[in-house]
Image 1 (cartoon, rainbow, N blue to C red):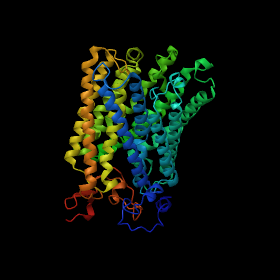
Image 2 (cartoon, one colour):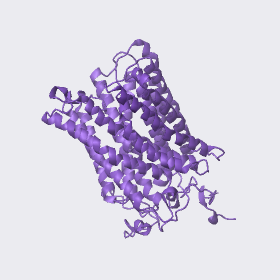
Image 3 (cartoon, helix red, strand yellow):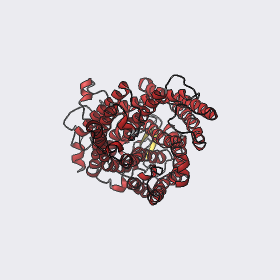
Image 4 (cartoon, rainbow, N blue to C red):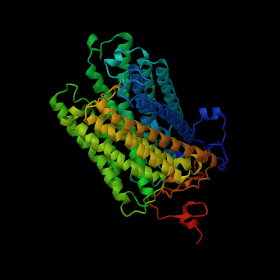
Length: 557
């Protein structure tokens, strides 16, 4: 199977291995019709980062509006539209597809020592679906009037203009993109592992992608059905969610959160996989409790389907249902806690190198820890009633999605950047960008926990004067955060122009993607690489001549 997998796609192209995938056949059509998983990953990366830029600009404008309790440049209706499009773009176009579609598509075949994913055409088709979904979201932005919030709760969405239809089409199309990506990953990991790579010798990033794919395959169809039902109600007047037509608006919440809470783990499980890789590589130690981390990924994926009701404690559901959902919510924190303690144990007595990717991993530990612990207050019945729909929820959500997923995404991007583009960035400037981002993020969202406990409701453009100081601190923090992310982008872009050539293995990782050139050739590997322990660092030595790691046998005595 490994030999077939290695020779499946691209074996007959006859490209010279000295030519990498970036420079070989650079015409625009060669990119738009490519079946190379690496190019598709890069195209995903460009689109996803563009979506993040759009969502980030809208967030900065909202924070600027909230600097004072009075209107500055956004009306109440415009503010509603801004937070709706900001949330929808960030969740559906960036956070959910970010790591699997961009980094996963690029790295997964390389980690397997394969030429491509199992279904190369499906990979390209998934990207086109993502682009079509992004187009319809931009159409909703241009037309205006989308002010329902990113959850599209009924009856808001059934009473809004037909611009909601464009958003529903976007979500439906993006759902298929997510399903195809998940299916591709499941088949690839099941059928294309090389000889010697058993389930428990896979890199933990592959385990996280596998668990994520399970959620994509099982949960995303529910979202597709939900938006189809909402569309039918909007177009044909069928009474499904609208109480004026005999429907039940609470039913929409059940459908939506049955998908959207597992979707939280579509966001965070790949991030956890990245952190597992970074903690081991930059501590120069095997991952502590490998099997526990692997099994905990599957446990999170399965338990995530059982806790959607904790979003609905104030919706009128029975006290017994709320009690059960609260208990299940606490149980899902156990596998997450296992990962955190195993990461800490991995660092214990390790040879820790504070290079840029590891700095992001350490930031993740603190920020995701705060996000997870604050979730316990929202999972408890008594405190949830007070904190529901306040800025406490906003802070918690951003500590999980931004402090967790985005920070891990940036850590993974810096880690695999030399492999993707063959250039090294300035590590000192990279660490500075990480530090400024960390400080700005905490200055932005820590005050929002306090705002929430004091009763400041979310999604309000106007507020009482007593909240102004904390809002202003949060806005200043957002400016710092924006500056940090801008520096991160500039550092990476500068490396493409003036960065030194990257060696094959700049970090000393033992997984297979570092056994090929940086960037890889169109065929990935000249010969099928030998799979071994992905966390055994004893067989490598740092070579000062190339400023990278090489197998011990190639180092001069």
